[in-house]
Image (cartoon, rainbow, N blue to C red; front, top):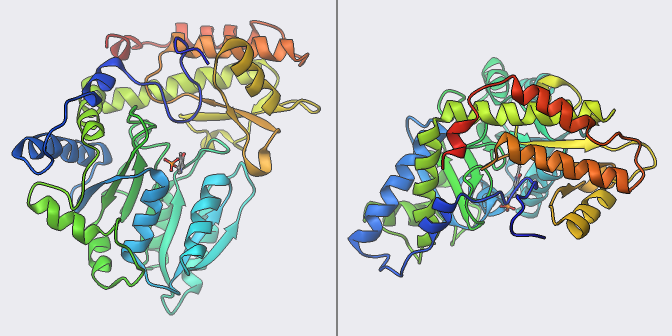
Length: 396
Ligand SMILES: *Cc1c(COP(=O)(O)O)cnc(C)c1O
């Protein structure tokens, strides 16, 4: 790796200099008013990014995976049923975690490359006359395949079935990069992590918790200690934590939100869409296609590129790292070798993405893949040239 080059993995993402500096701070007493003064703006900022009208924000020293565990262990009891579609490595891992916690997971097996199947979710909920299903789990952006699911559509399906299950959403690779509407979509728990759209180092699980989930918390019986929301909320009320918080990351989080809001959340989402669209045009110009089965499923934060027959995506990722000092993502699980992944989220500009596309092309040519150097880059250039507004982020 070269520290000069941006990374194109779907997290951790590139860090803006001002965010790194905000993380680098002297020791403070986390039981002092000084901590409360930096903590509160971070919590308020997350609330705005999630578009939460009610409920609580919880910041845990953990990662997205810990956020999944906090979501289920605070709201469910052993033997409870949850409904989840499996269509990639991340939806799979959350399901696996539920099973290991003694939950009964009703799994809707879905081809990788597809998103959450709304009609099957609605049918499963309609069939559940006795209200056995306590939660619906949804992976908003499946990072293994680059597929975005329709969370508003899941809420609609739940309402159409008149079902009272909670809705838990993994937004680890979407929140702060793609539109997210916690309250409007009727989300009960949203899970994010610090190292993706928030452009921070790994180390924080960021959760939004609805009033309904807080009610479920009171009677949930799964064991939890480190992640117990009740301890967190009691300590929050006193301006602090039940244990030592990740002070530097919380300081960085407040700064990252300041940057995002400085650019404007809508502009951030539009930038991610533009960057992604340029990547997709490059992929098509290479004669390849995204793993996502149709345009309505395209993720604006990550593209999994299906490689030509006889080629191996992992070879490209290895070569890019060894020869050019650039990081792309490998294919995971069922699509290992069949795809390589281009992360295009966080602190990125058109120019940075063009460098990534050019590097991918050099690797393809080195490996003897059937592409023409410059073809994808030119397609992205044509697109970026014709779209506007790219300078807001670059000003930082
Ligand atoms: C990265 C990611 C996770 C896991 O987060 P960690 O911070 O690595 O624990 C979960 N879900 C999705 C969709 C992700 O992209």
